[in-house]
Image (cartoon, rainbow, N blue to C red; front, side, top):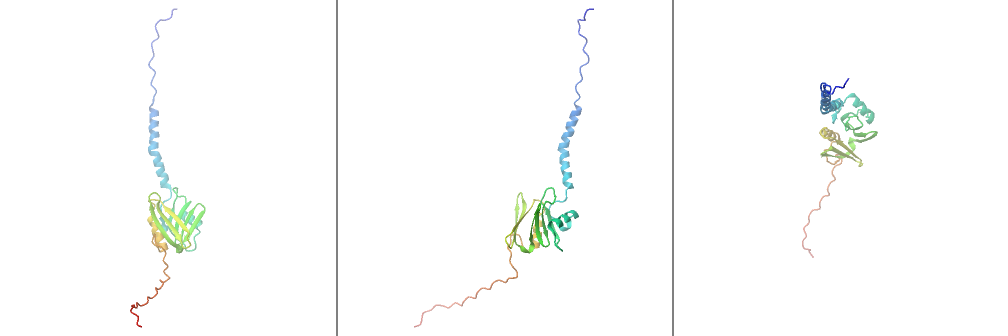
Length: 196
């Protein structure tokens, strides 16, 4: 038998690969990145405890227990305002004004200053830092507290002014001590000619 000199007829063309699943997967991935990640961040942020300066009556039981444990409040001492400075609102760095003291802690380090000992305090609005409060007591000890922008530094300032009885930037003036009397001036005697 002799070989057929003609080539066999070509079969149907090979099908093109189906890329639709890859396109759909790419679109879904892009949507997850563009919408899902921000939505997850918003969901995470909304699950966090409330941030910003809060009045004592706005605190939940967990926060009150943390303050009791960290600050060891005295009998009858109540929280006026509370501020957690951390982004995660985990109470690792906080500032508290009570009816008796200004308290600040960072990790295990706690600093406090009795309200009666505050000689002066200043308030500055710093563009990126927010409200910066610098308290100085009668012995010269300094306590600095920063309240982030949009976290109600005005409430913190009001609580400081009411608790200390001083306005921001004013010096302490003792109310008990009367002003020292000024010595009486001697009457003016005109100088005249001497009589001999």
